[in-house]
Length: 198
Image (cartoon, rainbow, N blue to C red; front, side):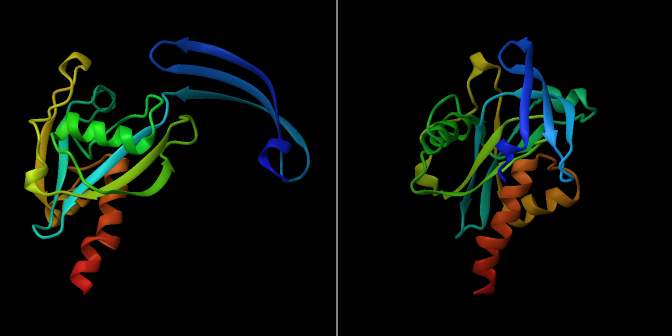
């Protein structure tokens, strides 16, 4: 039995229709016991997104960014957020979008990129699915200063860090962004870990 056979949507109410959409949905869910239960859920739809970890194996470095994020500040995080370059899909193909975000945010035009996985980071309330990538970078791929788009309020600093330093920032709390943690973990297991094992 598929999920669509276990759900009957009864009502969808649009609560907010700004840049993003907030909806309240009432539905019947067929429980594992076979009984039907009416449930209510609010979902926040901000569209899907992309993120990428640029890495340099020879230098054993990664490129990250640091910027202000109001939602994390509002939740008590009193620091700039260290992240991988990322952005909203905005109806583009994921690979094309992640390339443009990389150029806007860090000023690099990357060569081949690899999609490593897709993930829902907060599936209890947020509809967003992230497409996550990695790519090698070289100094000669730098084509601009990056920094993001000022008219969108972006004020982004690029960080080139030794991979071991970036990875240690997860444990000491300087990196608290989920997509960045996932991509650094991926790199530890599949990129930098392989090199040190070989």
